[in-house]
Image (cartoon, rainbow, N blue to C red; front, side):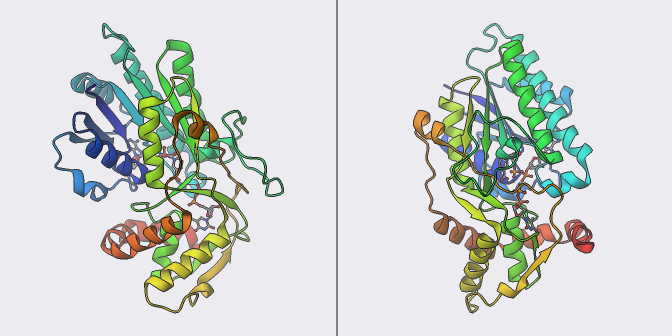
Length: 357
Ligand code: NAD
Ligand code: TYD
């Protein structure tokens, strides 16, 4: 079936991988990337597909209800894959309002625009889908002492950061639109992603860039927090499968069964960068600098994604060692992409974030 799909946040990290996958895999679909191009949005992430006939970019704020509603009408939108969000926990601690606005009100604006547009059609919600991309952080934190306990789709929401609280709020609105209006919604909660095109404020690209320039690596607390890492293209593949085959009103957890203590992953990254730059492996370990912990720092995230594997046949394709090697290689080969982002305003922001640590 031909589809006209709005992908929000398509100029960001995960969104750009989803846009690329859909544009290349579904030449009959029209893919409309709606992005405000905040500091995190970068059209350079989509250079390779920007001229494809089934791709269109629209610069817009998801909070701008009138623009979104008109776009749905003009483009006869049949599906929404909603990724646009403020996504960095440290920024949410400094500026929670922006997170509430974009993540909660922006999601509500997308839902309401889709509702009004779809309900006015003769076939209404038939053949439509509103797919909301969320995070495992809404479930709160797990204990290191109980490695057998993972987040399942039944885990109670218990967000701790302004970021995860705002994502939880958006998830609740999405489910409320199904329960109240019958909108065909799906929510997925994914673990930490890594891979090409991630903004270098997040752990892995930030540290790769710092190692390259021999800058200190600010490790929060003792580096003992645990995250469950998934290669971004595996997430994009899951989104494709779930958009097409997932059951309406369901939640699916997405994760790679790949838990790492921060300090251990940091050592792997250092050794990989050193090796690929022709330095002595491990010679940059002394860049590790323990700094004041993040406020409210969640100790452990770990996703149980067996439902998705069992019901829809998805599983991660890459071994972690292979994924990290690919990722480090990509950032080292794309230094111009990094330099472009890390110059100017971002440099000032980064300096101010770490000035008092
Ligand atoms: P990102 O910060 O790299 O990209 C976000 C994109 O949204 C940017 O292109 C930005 O310009 C756009 N955007 C922000 N505010 C907007 C607005 N008001 N209107 C329109 N566009 C706007 O984020 P990401 O890491 O790619 O995350 C994408 C989604 O996946 C988010 O919803 C995030 O919560 C979720 N998620 C991320 C991870 C992860 O590890 N990165 C894990 C699980 C879930
Ligand atoms: P991050 O990439 O910000 O993702 P999230 O907070 O959403 O999990 O951080 C991953 C982990 O790395 C997290 O436990 C915080 C830690 N971290 C550092 O120790 N130093 C840093 O400079 C950053 C950005 C993160």
